[in-house]
Image (cartoon, rainbow, N blue to C red):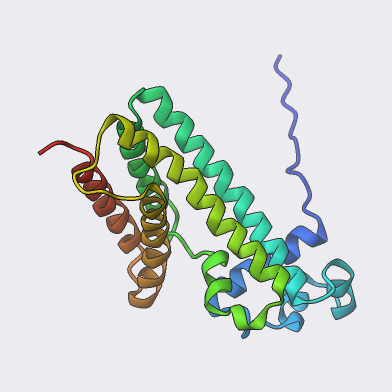
Length: 210
């Protein structure tokens, strides 16, 4: 006789629910158009309840940025680990990683919904210096993560044209951010996927001898 035990899913905290509701609202219409009142109502708490967890919208923005940095860092770490399992060559690892990223975006229901980091950049006039600094750190961390990979690629596969590894990392970041923006603007979630795959072709051509 087998015995099965139903394990209930972990309960989310009020803070986590606030972040989830705020994320969806901000991705849909931006920070400025998202009010504390609507977030509190959707979560089922009062304004005072919201301010207990976040003193103001700047604190909320910092928490959302931190959460997205952690989430994307974990996603990229998993993709990089898989790419390293499949190849020892840094160029092949990058090409595998870019395809896996495209597949990840394609596999999201309705496409990749958006990026808090991009939203904060486009509306940075709303935020204090700490939010702007947090966003800057996130962008520089992305650059550092991929710049080292492009430098390793160039050491084994000299590029056809002289190119700074930082610029290649920024190009990849721009493809992702721009793909998100265009996808939302024309309501075609696969734009980001196609742009990532196109960037992959460009990277392959840049580091493959003619």
